[in-house]
Length: 221
Ligand code: 0O2
Image (cartoon, rainbow, N blue to C red):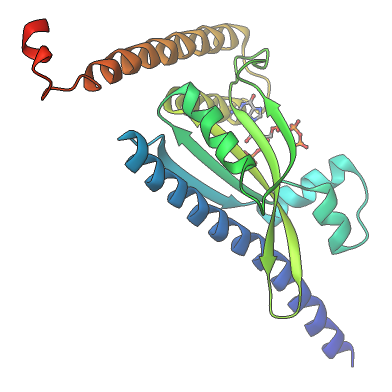
C-alpha cells in the first residue's frame, strides 16, 4: 500500500512538471504563428529566436526556501511562478512591446504581471521586459491554468544579460567594483546600440516603402 502511495506521489509530480512542458510547447507555437503572420504583414520577423527552459528541481527548492514554506504542489505552483520560462529575443526594442501586446491580445492568455526593466532598468544595467502569464493546458481529465515567465529582450540586451549572469555566478555575487562599473558601461553601450539600430531600421523601412513602379520614382531619383 505504501508502494502504491509512492507511485501516486511520483505520478502527481511527473504530471505537475509535464504541465509546464505542455504550456511551453503551446506558447512556443503561438509565438511562432504570430511571428510568421507578422512577417507576411510587415515583411520582417520581429522575433530572432525563442528559448524555453524548465526550472531545475534544485532551483525550485532554493526559491521555495527563499519565499517560504509550501505544503502542496498547488502551493508550489502559486509560489514559484517561473517554473516554465520562455525567452524571446527580438530585433528591435519596439518589437518587444509589439510581442508583449500580441500576447496580451490572445484571448486565452491571462497577463498576471508585467515588469518593465527597459523603461526602468535595474541599477546594474539589466534591461528586459518580463511578463508572468497564465496559459490554459487541456489534460485528459481537467484544464490547468499554468504560469509561464516570459522574458522579452533585444539581441544586445540578451548578450549583456548572459555575460552578466556568468560573471555574477563566477564571483558568487561578490563581483569586484571595477567589473560592475564596466558592466554598467557595457549596458549603456548596448542601449545606445539598440537605439541606433532601431533608427537605421526605420530609415531603411521608409526607403523600402517607395513604389518603384511609380513613374514619379525615376523623377525623384
Ligand atoms: P534563472 O536561472 O534565469 O531562472 P522572483 O524571485 O522571480 O519572484 P524577481 O527577482 O523580482 O522575483 O524576478 P524578476 O525581477 O522578474 O527576475 C527574474 C529573472 O530575470 C531571473 O531569474 C533572471 O533570469 C532575470 N534577471 C533578473 N535580474 C537580472 C540581472 O540583474 N541580471 C541577469 N543576467 N538576469 C536577471 P532567476 O530565477 O534569477 O534565474
